Length: 278
Ligand code: IPD
Ligand code: CA
Ligand code: CA
Image (cartoon, rainbow, N blue to C red):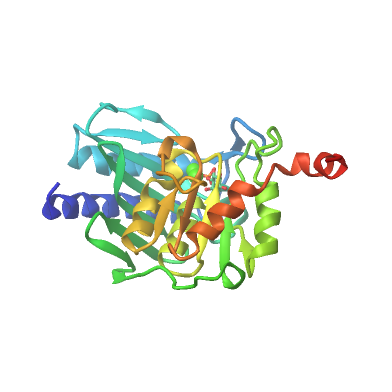
């Protein structure tokens, strides 16, 4: 893939994310239709749907032969294509419904299954994050880099909790407690794409989460990698976007976070372990 082609795809990703963001702003503080879908607490609003429509329109106008996978509409076009766009029109719907200003339109492009282009736009705070493989990462068009912290006890880390958290013991509660113990602080923003953007621009030093969908993270992983960070599975092995699990850091605390995540048993077993005799 040539640099010129990647730049063209990045410009299109940016146009799409900004189109989505403009639609989101027209609904900010003005939502009328908030519904639950799937697991309890998983919201969808008229803003999600309208922003998605605007994003799809941009992509289909420029690239009618590319496949698209979106949160609200599912699969569109040839999803077996070499090029698959992975779209979350409103990442941070709960925040948006409460007017908590951390929500974004996230537009990522997988080429041969690997995320290579990403644009994440938070229209409320007017922050645009962009990256493409080999082209670096930017925030509002200025280059960004991950942090240099190499001690977990001095690191600010961030995570999130999937909507199935009440239905599974693999709910991230144990890992959350463990990281509270080991790090300088743990944050939960409510938007996975912005969590990855925060790692990319050095606001936080590491991010982990489970139960994610490709559209939550496709764009964000490119931001982290192009800002000099590291993205992997919890145990440090190759990142698989279909696994739903991600560890993304500045690289310097990667092994420390990986060790902590791998060694933490689900919190549901903590009590029973404590009662076990050797
Ligand atoms: C959610 C957010 C949140 C994460 C959830 C996601 P949505 O996306 O990214 O931070 O913890 O797992 O599902 O529903 O707001 O698009
Ligand atoms: Ca999402
Ligand atoms: Ca969403």
